[in-house]
Amino acid sequence: MKGLQRLVRATGGYGASVVVSGIVSIAVIPAVIILAGADAWAAIAIAQAVAGFAFVIAVFGWGVTGPTRVAALPSEQRGGYYLGSLVSRGWLTLLVTPPSIVLAALMQPDYVLLVALTVTSGIIAALGAGWFFVGERSPTRFLLLDTLPRTVGTIVGAGALMLTHDAVWFAGVQGAGALCATVLSSISILRRYRGWRLDLRPVPAFRRLRGQTPEVAMSATSAVYVNLPIIVVQLMLPQAVATFALAERIMRLALYSTRPIVQMAQGYVPATPPEEQLRRARLVVKAALVLGLLGTAAYTLLGPWIGDLLSGGELSIDLALAASFGLALGALLASQLTGFACLTAFERTRTLAVSTIAGAVVGGILLVPLAFLIGLPGVALAMAAAELAVLAVQLHALRSVLRPPVDGAKVRL
Image 1 (cartoon, rainbow, N blue to C red):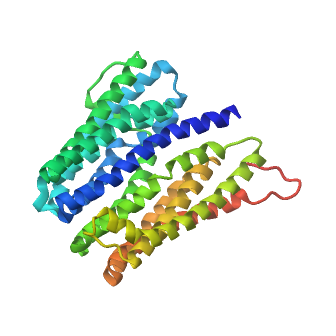
Image 2 (spheres, rainbow, N blue to C red; image 1 turned 180 degrees about the vertical axis):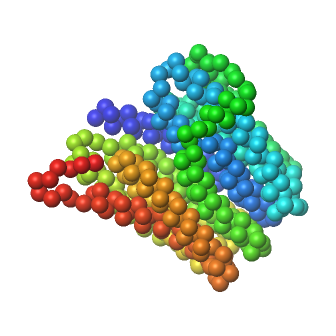
């Protein structure tokens, strides 16, 4: 019972960060579209997609492996581990930011300064310490030192946008908030965990990257099919970028809002004896499928209305586009539970990588043909097919894991 209470408290703490970030993210969408215009909104979306690719390289797996590593380290080694990762991520950020800015500027030549600031802001997020706070189980520090400065930067940036009607101010101030979060988090961590030594040399920094290539490969593959669709829309259907970006943002915010559910499931499934873990995993798989169906129905029915509300009537999400994104959202909602809560509990992380690759292959093959044949809903359908492929691979793997044992046979996990 005490373990469950601790889990709920921790989830509630991280949930507060999710709620705060989600509310602010939703609130600024109409501000950008209405005050800066749909074209500026589209430029920001393209720049964020480019930054999404670069972010994976800059963070280089610490967001995936970092929490577990921090939790296992003794206190006297945590400060050095964090500072070493920060230096390594800093060098990677310096390397990937300039070419990313150039790429985004080539796609949005009318908004060079805006996309430059947006790309920089997105990549700076790789320097954040949120993963460290998760590893040391500090949801309050996560909220106050990581989430809050970023949120304040977004709010102040939105205020500057209201005064100037220039999205450059929004992007610049938002980036300053992300940088502030890194500074405040680093001061907190390095003050509490002594015994570190600052070494800014590039050779040791890049040597620390060894051993994290599989995590980076999986994250990079995921980033491809997450961010590639809007790039394809920019190239094939440039007049529809703003609408697609709005529909995709609504889907991502809906997914983001369910993070506390995933975190609770991740703590719920692992159990002893093995029979109890099997029972819990079966229950979570059923819940995942129900959640997926609800997400699909909700987006299909409410997506057009939400899009109209957030854009102030400037952009329209039709039923075909809403249904396609609803299907993608449903698959995502289900797979994050079957993958991160169930497969990881049975140490099937390799299946997670295989499912990600399967999704990337399916999405990559279908993206351009469906965009050419159906238009904007076709791009969303390709995304849905990719996410359904991910879910199918995960469910296939779980089917053998969760199959009831033959009478008299021992359960092996």
